[in-house]
Image (tube, rainbow, N blue to C red; front, side, top):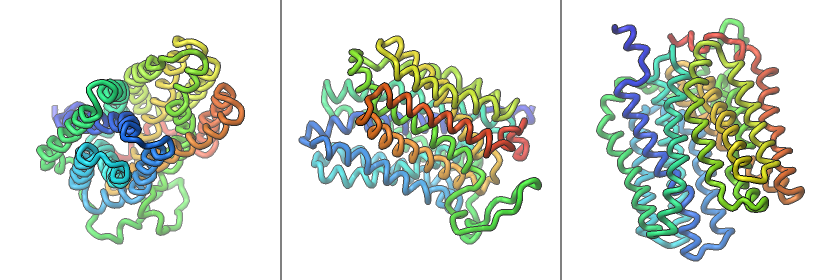
Length: 415
């Protein structure tokens, strides 16, 4: 019975942590969609709205570089609680200080909290999920992101355009404060399940021991902030996210140009297929390895972009969104599991932050590149061109990550 319990995913700690993550992401998604409308109502022009959106991402990405080292050095729970507390304070402050200049400054601090809090929750999940079912467990954990992504944006728009932005900020703050309360209440219990903090700062610079088949790499200063074993899956996720960014940023504009003004169904289809496919992808990884899921995810991501490129009706856009859930959603579950599954416990924080740094960079690079291409050749051609990037991710892993893809039991080392 004890052995069986060791392999259970839905333990008390996992359910509580997943609830915390759901509440954090729900509040985040509401702000992400509703705040641009709010500041526009305050009188901000399009350029200022763009600054407010981008400065958050830039700050969060910079913080993630150091977040892993902070998690491994000072502990997971304190970092998670601190990050969520900062986020809660910032959401409340948006309503208390409805001044555009102040909000820009608040977004910088909000990015700090998001970079710490979101990296911490994912790292804690990696600590408490049983290693025999690691990829499956991470898939279930990531479903909280998909659920919040399907509901929170629609609720945010409804509130900010209906009752008012203050109500949107109040609901967002409520979810974030709920996450904070749960994280504080369960802090001692979760602390027992997480990897201990590193005893000496100098050990941050120690790279993980290589496998016997791998040559010893020379240690460098960057090892304190980047995990080498996470670089391959993180780079693949960056390439896939170039395509994802083009969907989130431009699919509504592309749909409007095609005479399809209501595009919410596309994102709902994306969320549904993500929720359905992630557990199956996770179980496949745990039983068969990464090769099949990696190829499937990257090719579905490319197919999603090609379908969206030629879409002229809502059902076609929904089909593209569904393929995106199978592809992009599966890619995140596959590559995130690969990034952290085989690293030592004291390096999981760095591995998680490495993955999310490249994850965010893919979004930033994708939005920038897609905008340039769309401005030059239009949305249809832009999506066709951007489809090359997830295909490159597939080729990249088949060539550079051949040994990782060939592993039939990716979590065996941590059993």
